[in-house]
Length: 264
Image (cartoon, rainbow, N blue to C red; front, side, top):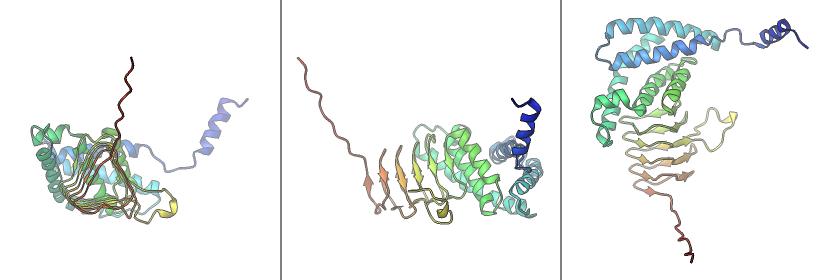
């Protein structure tokens, strides 16, 4: 039987990722929340918060570069900072889209404070810009943090237009190469995914395109990089789609009703 010291040495010898530092995960989560609060909390001092966010970002960025064994871009924070006003404008459009289309929403402030779908969209928009700046690890850590908080899994590589709406949020999955245009509404449990998962397909479009003004109801599954949902379509709940749908279409799941026989 191995001794405790021998077991410890075996564990140490098999920890073959010398730069893997799990503090990056926690620090990225704190950065993500602070970034969200800076943009939306009226009590937050934007100037002071931006200065602290810069310090925090540079710390996690160095950790991420070390783990990923990549060189750091000294300008990445400034490039990201330049994008923040535009991100905020987009998020305000998202919030108003939720407010205007959800009868349960009593105010836009309620959307900012209480809607998991809005939080998921916000973290997506932050992580997407960092993804475009080729920032290692941090975009995925941000998106997975939002996933854990909201049940919504949006890959930071997805391309999503203006005035995006996710209601209830839980169970929604949006893949890396998905393209979503403007004024699209998605409900809980929707999957915009790939038809197959193979490593060789990494650099190909694997996920669907959703055109303008489309509504996709709960638990619909839409798969494939060549699948396009045309503009103004309504996709009903629980449907399974692997082929393109022409614009102005309604797709729904048909069900059969059978009456039970009468018993004497």
